[in-house]
Image (cartoon, rainbow, N blue to C red; front, side):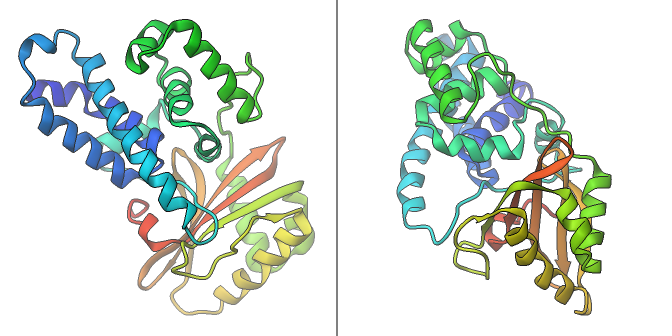
Length: 286
């Protein structure tokens, strides 16, 4: 059991996190799977990787169905739980490789549970179609069709590679400084003309209930609160790696209360994801 855990724990966490969008749920899923595997007869574990991945996949599907119902009642926009780690081995493995960008995790919400499984297994974890077919109990042909359908729903062509985030820390610093200084011209120059800001407060803290479109409205939305925050004692703005890419955190004396993650295209910010729900900020502390 210990050998299985050491060998497959990281892989299973990567899979579960990207299937659920939740660090907490991913940890629970992996924990449950290793508890249950202790009761599995050895003759069923001739292919432990496939068996464990299937257990994780099935458990995540069950969670996904119940999560869908909860999200229909969720106040405002729902965003995946961000992940930051320097010390935990399982999470550090995630931010190092095999992790879809945060923007891609957001797009995964457009997919059905089976489409999401096929997409993550193929595009993030590099499974071949035979392995995927066995895990989801469909033919390889059907799996290829599911992946093609997933690409279409996410606005990608069938032969398009999953984009890797290339946000430079300098761009994040530049944008934060422009906000703190109230430099509207600099802010607008960094934002794409069609930028979209999505905020997630979960109904627990103040956040935009609907997406904000265009750079003028996004700049107006951010400028006032950021400049006001700089006058509050104890507020700190930090650049950190979240989900393996540069992002910013806003910290008060009580702890981190906001995390902002950027999706950049052509050296301009195309999407801003602002997570403020305190329940989703447990895994962004150093």
